[in-house]
Length: 117
Image (cartoon, rainbow, N blue to C red; front, top):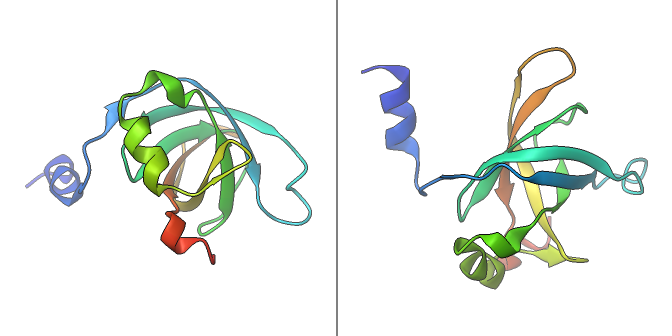
């Protein structure tokens, strides 16, 4: 089996291509007041892939703001994910460099049940 087949089999949720501007903050004392920009690449009901220029670390908690109104899955999303100040809270689960100062970052949305992160 090739790597793509293995990746497809591991996917628990269907992903939709979804490229829109993204604002985010890294939820750490020294960075939480800095609003950063990137864009989304794809989204599922469990998380999203985004492209950003700043370095983040695995397990960093991010506040994510993007236009959720255009997605049909967002109604379902908003019932279960942790939303704070109109942004979704997520955890960095994957980071892949893709050029100089450019990173594809996998984010897992935190659910309301996981609010004690």
